[in-house]
Length: 131
Image (cartoon, rainbow, N blue to C red; front, side, top):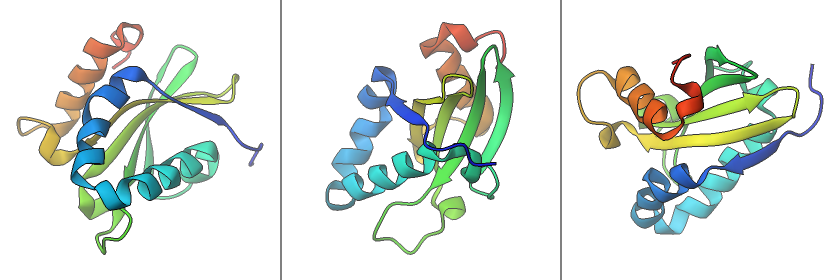
């Protein structure tokens, strides 16, 4: 059941890392892409009903969610683009915190999941135990 908009906060770690490279790489399309991501996250309950989002785990009062997105102006699907967004959804607070935005090519190694989890554990100690 949709309970209205959820506020979205972009954490400084997310802004300072891969979002910065997305802005540089996709100058003409990044603003519209990021606006679309924010709009989807404002309705995260609906997003989770699609194949573009996956509940990873519960972490205290937050739910860790991985979403897929595509760059505006491209023909790739969200799934095949390799672009991902990791968020913490605080259901009671009606807030989504963007923890990490990355492309698969940004993540070193073969195991993407373990790599992004390590990045999140290091940047956000509050999620170390649950990831």
